Length: 521
Image (tube, rainbow, N blue to C red):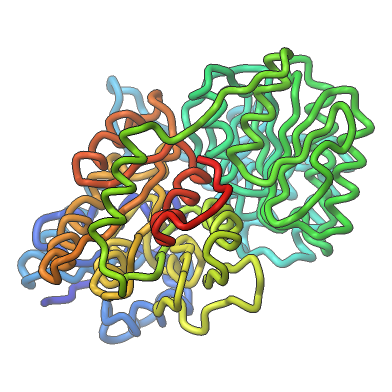
């Protein structure tokens, strides 16, 4: 293997662009690894530790971009580097010139009627640009991460005082007036307004709502810390109030990873003060099944979407999402082909909220479920690279994504882990998600299939089978097409389910060899 790197001075690119460049370079012939990152101290350290650079480049700073390639030969690595400029060049559409602005002020001067800004900068630079946006009366979608809690509170309080939203920091998804921001899916307009402190949680419920025939008025992201004790749900409560006033919104749907108990109660009180019916889904939190006639609590993303649809239908009915006969036969066939030594489930997720939901569903079925992002801190893995008993891994956590593309874009890391887990004779089932939408890989199922086939060969040599269970989060309107992605996985021998919750239940049922009473699927 040969390693080649290059530095582009004063060439800042946001994280989305860096992820796309890394993914495209990594897909070139003979390239094993590719990483396009900004030259921060932490990123340079990571590149050196992983062998993608031998020595730290001289005189680099956080505004410089570093691209490192590991390939089968030095020639292949250099050829990949030579492709870099073509990847950085803006697309030419119909000969229309594309104007670039170097800061918020110049961009706003060119488009003063704008009322929404997307900010994707290193955390230390992001705050100033958000302040500028707030001062101009502009809502902000803050994709940037690594702002302090104190900075987040300050920005959100400023925005609140002006009746504005700050979606973030670390906000990965939103849908405003039908326009998807970040990792969003293509969904139709409709009567359900979503507020979510969970990126893939938002993607899951909005996709399920679309696939069930309804649609979304707006989906407002909050960033993962908004409902923490420190931040206090500032934007969650403001977003709920906005949707309560919005004429196109008839039903509210509030989704979050496990929130602070105190803040969860405040958010529910704000929901109750409004006139519109609402569904509240706080993963990991228990409330009464029906808080009152207009507020329903859901324990899973699947149930949350279905309860919101029930409000829309207005007739007490909701669509059912169940395992068909062929799916159950496939699950039963898997059970019969497994060795008794295959006892454990391994979940490999690109979506953090989907990983949370899986743990919540699997724990009552399997018992202890370990994770790098556990529901219960008692079950946190000491080493995220080593599974323990039943394990669900969030491969989108920062420990895996610093200096490399997110797993929704680049399947390399998940493919390596998938083969590693299948090589363990104690692994019975591998559960995983495939997330579609803007920015995500153009063929995420296809990216995983070579590793799935390799894993099956490894297990077959031992004379056994291994279960692959998956859920594809997305819609047929997404660039990757939901049905096409599901079909590709089924042809590779994967059991594909319509929701992450159902996939988790089935995966647990297979792992327990069907010895689970009262399980609904």
